[in-house]
Length: 576
Image (cartoon, rainbow, N blue to C red; front, side):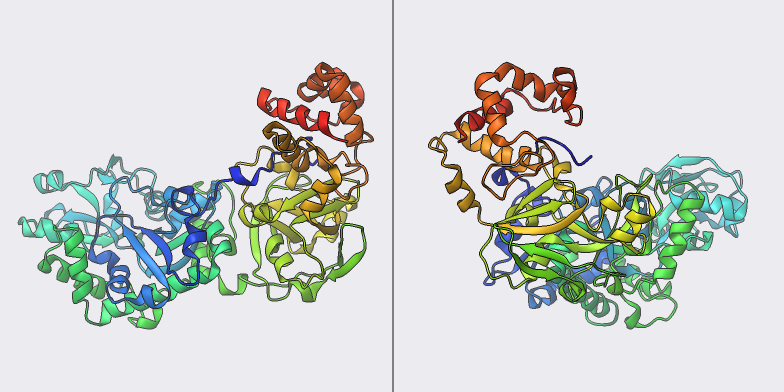
């Protein structure tokens, strides 16, 4: 995995994954004299079930936290989770089980707080149907969202079976058939069907034995970049929900009605009364203190239930899906000192347990080369770690030197945008101990993995193992030493960027700190090949082993087209 020849590291071409629309809005919004612009994507049109967020907006609670919040209305195809994962919104709302399932499919979402302790989803039926409990659904058709977790758990819990009709969000079929059973929000559809003369009854789906939260969530990328914004949004949202449920909600309701004219005063009062009566927001305690709270044990129960019915593709741990306070910081089981060197190889300081104490602790489930399946890792973001160190030299290029001569390098932009993680623990053991237990001690003492590959051409080159030291240098010093007379040529500049982020992993630049020594071919030797055997060099890139059996370790790069090869050749033919 590690020995890849080339990996594009053009900072200007990287996409910021967590800013709305994939742009650099986060950076602009983070200026000290400007409020931070935040987008909340709701799962439906504006309604009292979102009341706490509108309360926080209308009463200025978000503004007091330094946030400028835009609430985007949803609908039948809101795709809330996807929009948050893609960076088109910073926060979304939905069910906790949906976040867990998405996480199991590799979508990097994490729950922050609960707007409802109980899911308001229910089954709605006519009093004349004779249904008294969920056990009475056996053999009856139910209109609901196909594939929903609660349907499978309901069948399992009550040993019943029934055909599912896809939910169409209308009520005409229900009103026309007294035997009809339909999924609903207990706060919503019963109001309208009762107004139409139906004798409606409901049973909350939490009675099925599956009891998800309604939550607000964010992407792991955004949480890692802006933990203070996530915390501020969390505080203001809890304040808004407490006020909406127990205080004056006049302004919030006016804002909701303005955005969704279907929300009249009678209906909004019905929704609020239903939320209070069913203790949806507060839970059984009925206390405002329960608002926003998520119980880790309850999340674990949901994970277990989703695994039991085969809806969770990969097992999750609670810290992987819920932003627990105790998971925000951590301390490794053990930590071997990691030296930081200058460009000349002189030791500047040692990174030890004290150096990482207090930094934000990242926990992820990641695929590693020595593992058969994703493993639980813990560590700190390399960029945050380096910024926290009091280094006595200027630097803008970080090198990770490995025990086998491999070297990865990271610009400050890559450290910020692509978020390399310095792995300190694997499955609860130090990285060195875990590697030794797998019979691969050379993979330690440290590994680095990109959490956000972005649009790097070959991001795997930034995932080194066997990291034994870090080195800092100025890229400008490197350029001066290269003495490239034609650096102003676009192709030469692009080729240098390619070489820096790719070839330099294995091929050393003579008389410079940059470059690994895995290959016995230095940059000068590659330059000679490019000048005198261009066709051979090109074939070597596309078919290494077929061109030269001695290059069997070198992976082919079929995704490199004529422009990349032309740029690389342009740089090497001007290299001295």
